[in-house]
Structure formats: C-alpha cells, structure tokens
Amino acid sequence: MTFTCHYDSPLGGITLAATESGLCGLWFDGQKYFGHGLKEKAMTKETPVLLQTRQWLDIYFSGRQPDFCPPLQPSGTHFQQTVWQILSTIPYGETRTYKDIAMETARRLGRPHMAAQAVGNAIGHNPISILIPCHRIVGSNGSLTGYAGGISRKQSLLDIEHIPYYIE
Image (cartoon, rainbow, N blue to C red; front, side, top):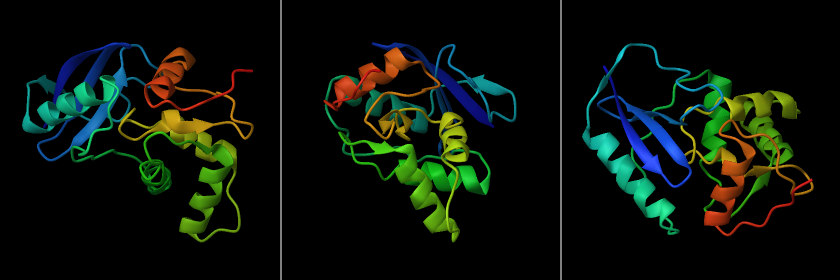
C-alpha cells in the first residue's frame, strides 16, 4: 500500500508518497514526471515515514543540514537506481556535473564510458527530489541546467545550501 500526504514548502506544494517501509516519492506540485513510479492507488494518511520526511524537510527549509534521512525506497531500473545511489552520495553544499555522474555510473556498472544524456534522463526521473539531491547537478562549467521541478526551484535549493552556480 502507498500512502501520501501534502507538504507546504517555501517553494510550493510538495506531494510525499511512502510505503510502510520507505519514502518512494517526493514531487513538487506540477513538476515534470509528477507521480511517476506510483504503481497503485494511494491512500492519504500520515505514516511514520511521512512524518519523518516532513521533519527532515522542516530542517532543510530552515537552512540547516538534517542529520538523519528517512528510509528511501525509489522505484526504477537497475541503471536508474545506480544513478540515484550516486546522487545520494553528493554531500550537502556541494555539486557534481553530469559528466562526473556519468563517469561514476560507468565505473560502477563496469563499462568503459556512459553517455551523459542517459544519466541526465535518469536524473530527471528521480522520484525523490531534494532527498536524492538531483538539484546538486550542474553543467560542466557550473551552469544551471534542467530540473524537473523547474530552474527557479533549483536555484532556490542551491541558495539554501549556499552553493554558487552560474546562470547562462
């Protein structure tokens, strides 16, 4: 069973989704791929996982780095899971490039190289925004590039973490 709840963030409404054992979705209202990966009808109910996620978001949006993470349970292909695991290792307040993620994905999958476009597609389909920090991915020159929640939200998330960026 999947449970959902709404969170009012400073950047707009967020829908949270979780199973009994982990968070499976976090989408800004209206973002690209909203609800992608939800496989069954969801019931609106505050669960321990959703409550913990709301607490994490309260800390994050207050400008502090949370010292815990709710259990995460994103649904995706092996390739997507690999990319999302790499994203999860990017420390608060730091960025990586698509090329960095592509190189690490290739290494983990035992391949000589990986197309940055394929990695970008997996990043764009990240079902757990913010906690799996796809907003910390920038272009090779430090410029802002696509974000399923919108570039203005990406800027705001980077500002919360005091991360410099370049706008083309």
